[in-house]
Image (cartoon, rainbow, N blue to C red; front, side, top):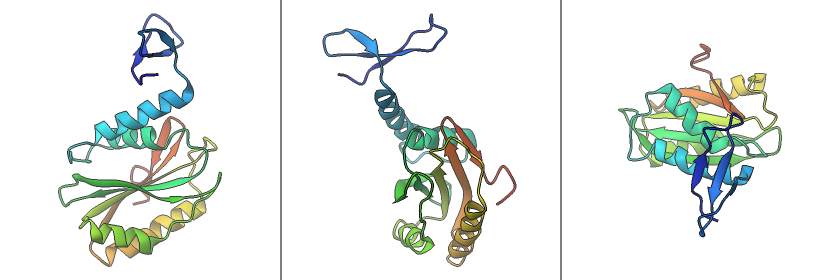
Length: 172
């Protein structure tokens, strides 16, 4: 199967189709849609574009993290102009938690010569509400990165097709 998706704009149910190598269309599976969304998310932040648009960053992270069955903690590393240096999924966890080690985040940020970082993780449950542990981790990460003059710009939680921003909520 090819990864070419087509949107049937005459259908109110927003069905997506996949075109196979023979030109036949079939309803796309969830796995095909998510794989294509991850590819499109990569394209949204390609070529070191600036990550100063919160909506675009949310779309990117939803494309990368939505639909995962376990928690993943991911980081966007940025230069001093907030342009993309790299996106890395540094920590993988279980269905309801993931351990994040600030020391490892700092090591990667220093290796990449990053001036700023955006953290994101997913909630496979579909509930985007931040936990006490999420807030404590954010504070710890801010302090760890500040020691090296690296800013944590945001911490986003992706839950399905939604994402909440700690910066927008005033936590950063």
